[in-house]
Image 1: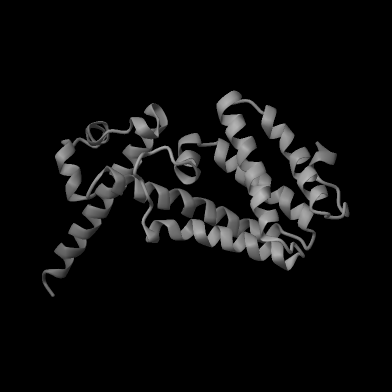
Image 2 (image 1 turned 90 degrees about the horizontal axis):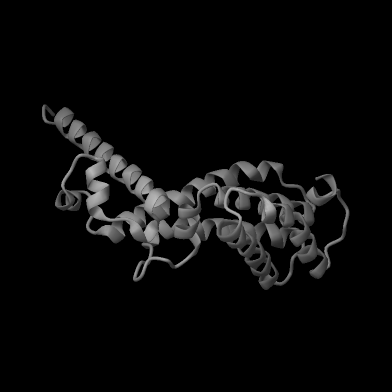
Length: 207
C-alpha cells in the first residue's frame, strides 16, 4: 500500500511525457509536414534525446498511430455533439455533416491528411486507434439509412465529393474559401442526384 502513491505518480508522469511527445509531434507535423516529422525534432522539443522516445513509443509509426487515434477521436466528439442538430431531412443533414467535416479538415491540414490520405509509406493504424473512424462511418451509415438512403454507395459518393473539395481547398486555396463556397452547391448536386426532395432551405440558399 505504501508504494501505491509512488506508482500513481510515476504513471501520471509517464502519461504527461507521452502527452508532451504527442503535442511536439503535432507541432512538427504542422511546421514540416507529416512526412517531415523526425524523432530528433520531436525529442528536441521536449528536451529529450531521440533514443529516449523509445521508452514511450516503440517507433515513429507508433507516434503516428497515437496521433491518428487522437484525430479521429476529436472529430468523433464533434460529430456526437452535432447529432442533436440533425433533423429527419436527409438533405439538410447532408449539408450540416458536410460543413462540419469540411471546416474540421481545412482547419488543420496535417491532421486531415493523417486521417484520410496514405501519405506515410508503410503506416497502418492499429485496430484500437482505427476504431473511432469505424464508429464515425457506421454512425453516418445509420443516419443515412434511417432517413431513407437505400444504396450505401450513395453515402460513399457524398463522402468522396466532400473529400475532393477539401483536397482542392487545401492544395489550391489554403487559407481562402473558394472551395468552401462551392460545398453547398456540391451537396445539393449530390442530393438531387440521389433523388432527395428539396423540402428545406439549404445552406446554399441562405449564403
